[in-house]
Image (cartoon, rainbow, N blue to C red; front, side, top):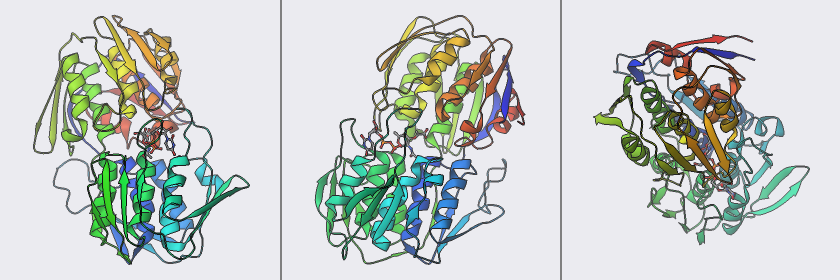
Length: 434
Ligand code: EPU
């Protein structure tokens, strides 16, 4: 297994190009299974989770081809990834096997598209996850309301549709609020259902909007995406289209915090600050300056970081996917900060590792109380999940001495070329091949 060796203390300065969004690309790739003809996706990041999704839709009869480079890249930075063509060539297989689902929970995204287009889906039930329980009951409930029938067998969810799915008005929220991938699954299925579907309590995340925008290019009739009430007028078929994936707001937020924690100055290209409005709000209070010009974000910080309070919430609130990274920053703030995790109340595996680096964090239920310290020290720490790992990279960048990060495959799932991007702006980070 690869490791990262990070020698802390460098001030980051320079330009970083933000990649396309992992969490947008994954469900969009699954949605491509519903289209006739070729779909071309641009800005799909090169990540191990994307490779897993390509393998999955490949097994489900899609032919995929990645072009060498993106002719529309005008940034002068590193060439963007080439467009990805997806064409459905065989609709016989309807099963997402455990071997793939166990490596990537987002495999559940094929459920809605398979039911809507092929009338049948067998998807291995995703098991436990490092960030807590991640049930899929809301996905199944929403699809049942559209008329799909479900049973479980041998660790699989088996769904079938007699005739065609039928649109209806439904409430999609759960105890923890809206579900992002659940909304996308039901939205996809409703796009090909008979009649009108109204999703009340839908997730408003930019990734939901991106998927709906692509489906509309394919001929779907979706309105209200980006609000809690989405209206979908079902159509008979969807036709392949061309679509560029939105920039990765979580990668962007992680690099904003990288600039802040190293007291650096970064220019982040290809981002949408509107997708980070709550993050910007909290960081301003910490004392970080973030400004934008067209699609570029400029970040600078002061040496003194203020302690703050933050609660994770569904969009447009502060995203759970940046909670760990913000915590790494607040470890060095002047005073006591409080972070409450409302989406995944157990998502705190980074706390113990940050404390090994000299942080003073105490966890009380879904809340972490962070007493700012003067410095962090390098240590050997272990990645437990994607965003916790990003937090440890950030801590390593500023820690005194060397940080050795084990199990960086977690980072490779969601951050494209992270060490190369950081080295280019002055970080001292090395990948040690395992
Ligand atoms: N929930 C249910 N039942 C369901 C589905 C969700 O109770 O059927 C609960 C969850 O347990 C959680 C809350 O609803 O408490 C929200 O979960 P959601 O369904 O929105 O999460 P997700 O769609 O499975 C996506 C991202 C996650 C991100 C969450 C929240 C992808 C591939 N994953 O997951 O990203 O944390 O939304 O924004 O898009 C990551 O990138 O590191 C990551 C974990």
